[in-house]
Every structure is written in C-alpha cells, then in structure tokens.
Length: 413
Ligand code: CTP
Image (cartoon, rainbow, N blue to C red; front, side):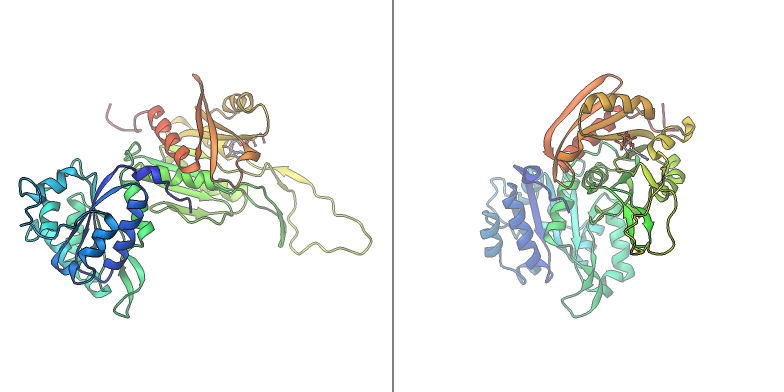
C-alpha cells in the first residue's frame, strides 16, 4: 500500500475524541501517528474513556493537556465546546461507543465531547467517527438506526471492521487500525474535485498465456493506477478499478475487478464505460498475445528444437472506449510510458487514440517505484507535474482532470 506522506497533515489541527471502549489503546497509537505527521492534536475524553486510558497518557502523546469536562475553565471564555470545535480542521471520535453514537444521533450534549460535536461549524469542520463495540451492539437495530441518522446528518462513519473482538467474540464492530484511521482522515481533508462523478481506471500489466503455466507480461507494477484510484476516491468520485495481475491492496472505497489478459480487460471495461464520466487508462496492456494458447504445458522433446510462437495484436482498450458514440463516451485519459522522445510520442499518441489528455512518463525509470514525474499533453500543449510520490502526482492529476472535465452528462446547464 502507498503510504500517506507526512506533509498531508503538517500544521493541521485535529481534535481527537475518545469515548468509552477497549479500543482507546489504539487511539493512543493514532494520536502518536498524527503528531509524527506534523499535526497539532487536541485530545478530548469522556468520563468512560478515562476508565480505559489515562488523560496522562494522551497528554504525553499529544503534547497538550487533555480536555475532559465542559466545566473546564482553561479556555479564556470558559466555553471549551465552542473554542475547541472552532479551532479544528477536523474532529475524529475514536472509539465511538454505541452510547456516544446515540448521543450524536439525538443531538445531546451531556458531556464535553458530544457538546463540541454538536457545536462544530458543520460546513467547515468534518466529523469522523470510528465505531468500536461488541458485534451484537453494532448489529442492534437501535445502533443501526442511529448510525444511519448520523450519516444522514453529514458525519463520516469509518468502519467498523470485522474480526476478533476484545470480548472474545468474532464479528463486525472492531475499530479500524491507527494507520487506516490516518488514511481516512487524510482522504477526508482532500478537496472534493470529483464529487458525484464516476471514474473507471485500468491498471497493472496484462498476462497473455502461452500455455497453462507460461505467459507474456511486462514490468508494470500498477502503483500509478492504484494511486489514481485512491486519489479519485478521496476526491469524492465513485471509482471502479479494473486491475491486471498485481499484488496491491485495493484502495478503500474503490470497487475492483481483477482480470488477466487484454481481452478480459476489454470485456470488463466496455460494458462499464458508458456509465462513467471519466476513463483513465493506466494499464500497460500487452500489445500482442500468442495466437494459440496450448491446452497443456508445452514440453521439450529432447531434440533441442525450440517452439515457434505466432502472435496476434491485442485490442486497444483506450481507443475502443474513445471511439464509443459520444453519448456513451467517458472523458478519456491515456498514459504513455516511453523510453525516448517522451513528449513527441505522447503528442502523437493523443491524436492517434483520439483522447483529450495523455499523461506521459519515462517508463523504465518509474516501473515498480513509488515516485515518478509526469507531463500532461493536451490540445493546448504540455504541462509538467514535477517529480513526487505517485500518490501526490495522482492527486495533482485528479485536480487537472477535474478542471478539464465537461459538465456532467444530463446535468444542469
Ligand atoms: N492501451 C490500451 N490498450 C492497448 C494498448 C494501450 O488501452 N492494447 C492504452 C494504455 O493503457 C495507455 C495508452 O493506451 O493509456 C498508451 O499505451 P502504450 O502502451 O504507451 O501505447 P501503445 O498504443 O501500445 O503504443 P506503443 O506500444 O507503440 O508505444
């Protein structure tokens, strides 16, 4: 998985709230991660949370005295719920107990943490809650009603995950891990350039079988495509990722379809394309496949004779989508991995494939790495996205795509 870089949380001010639950110990680690990433963290705890970890621990990790009572007079105006919520870039409640979620759903403010959630300026300060509770409590209709209500009120609910629980049972209700909470927070703070848009992405190599045990593939790692899928999801898009054979975790919130060959990739992409606003073809599709796939392993016959392979050309997935009738055609972005004359080849590829934007890079210097440099080539010329992590470049590319995108099809004029 591509790590979030420290810069994303630098100088952000995050209120981390803890309600009662064994998972409070994970929040200690989460706070440590945020501080390491350069964020300012103000911890607020309920009485119940103080039974699980001490304010002293959280103070030591955050470097700030913890707030635990609405009667705390440390704020100059003695209104901690107002001051703390106004100063925050985001509020994360982790763990959020069933009782705390019920308080949020009902708009109650009996304790400082619930009060400051209620008092936050909702349009400016996102509220994220990470439920943690026994699976029966999570599945209870009252909890599910309350969760649906807080979602409807604009709260982002993180998880919960399924797995072993502190009570010894197994099921839904585990709090997300500290690194997952951090990634969700970083995602939440990204600009929502693609809210309401649907994005289809191809990624990775394809594998063209010669026989049941051999095949032809290439050195694409899929990292750039997966980073774009993550960045598009962070930007608010509904993302479908059609992936060739790669060993990468699916970015959270992304729907993934695994394929092997170019023909399978085309068969997955074509029916989906018309329902999408954007198509980004990052896959390194094999240009040719063996004309015949042997049904059994090809064996040496002992004579030293080598088999002769005949090839046929694979379908061009990007060009096929780009040539759909206009009403069915998403806005297409191609990639060009070149070894020389990068920009010239990208310009030619843009015209040949009939797409508005081609993203060029130097293939051999990026395969498998976590960083890259890109050149965007469109009808107006070239624009460089300078060297950076693939995730940072993916976010910049998503912003560039959003800026060029026509209004939604069938949308208001
Ligand atoms: N592409 C595709 N289907 C193919 C070949 C390429 O969808 N069969 C897409 C790639 O995902 C990429 C773009 O087309 O977005 C350019 O791919 P590239 O391999 O660089 O170009 P080719 O068309 O294969 O041209 P060449 O191999 O001559 O550079």
